[in-house]
Image (cartoon, rainbow, N blue to C red; front, top):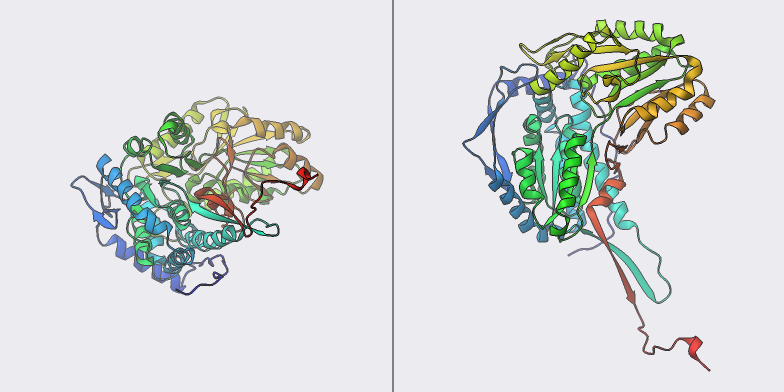
Length: 542
């Protein structure tokens, strides 16, 4: 076979289409939405390259129109988890021995398929299945998934290029082996791109994967699996099943070949997983890699020198895009009293202009939350706030689930900086404001740092550079992604690697080389060209 030192195409961020009225992409996406609406799909699991169906079916419906049926998926059980592991282990040797450039080619092809012929299908599935508007779906499902695939290929080559120095007469080299065993990808509902990245990143590095998506993201996960298969991912390399979490865990975390988990989800679930792995550590062939991004209670901290309109826009976008269902969404804000009235009026004006409804109407900025369980949880936070003497509802506060799971973007004003909604992750379109006196800037910085167990994202607004420097230092451990004079959400692959610490996860920075390094086990090889034949060192001479 031919050999060479191959250069992969330079990674670039996929351009975001506008979907403006009259644009060709708008018409094309609307046709894809109509096509998806017009039929019901029968979604199988994929294990060892085979479609696996069961008689136990569950319906898939748009969160904004829960009476409509998009299709059904086959529920699996513990036997399907075991079959997926067996398939992954059977495929492991051949996949690990596949040359890196061929692995790279597969995932570069997947990127181009999503950027081209699958773009509308994946975006439409995300819009219908997860209730994202066209622009949010375009950023997530199409562009970010493409970016993950392209940049991860580039990072893979950069990892392979990193080699040690060699003294005269020897050659030191490092090879990056896949992990022993299989990797478990456990993916959330809110980002199609995360669902694509969590199984593909370990697979790209030569690992085989078993993948469980959230039940509320299966519709677009199915499309992703179609892409992987068309791109040429071999049978058994990525195995997709639909079971509940405890069932998956009872098989996976007991298996001797469990090699690692790539996780995005709730903090509580992740902590329980970590505890389970720790309790089973003696059973595993090696120490598993535990990589997780979990919750957040993301803040906007405002200095008195800031501009009210800029702060208001950061709140309106950062808290309410995708109904606040982002780990990075702004959920608490600290605003000095000299700016509060202006900020409040600007935010209220923004909210009055929001249109709320289904995703097929491109005029709607706000859509539905993901399911009834989420709806009920968020509604309770709002009801409790209405009943509290410490909280005032500044805007919103309404909700209705008769047709879809719609919750009005809600702004709360709390006199207590430690009120529940200032501390706990809500994961919905609710932000709580605390107003402080301008002279209390540094004390409020300390309050921001100590209020929440999370440390995912945060934003600091100031026109005073000295104040910015003080704030950046005070909040250095409060957010893994820190934004200056911008909303605390919207990380771009290749530009802002994403992750947080404390209760927000392991901070292994998805969208960077850091994450891919977790899916390899390096081996150092030292080769001596002229081997010594005498044990005596020079100092032993007479």
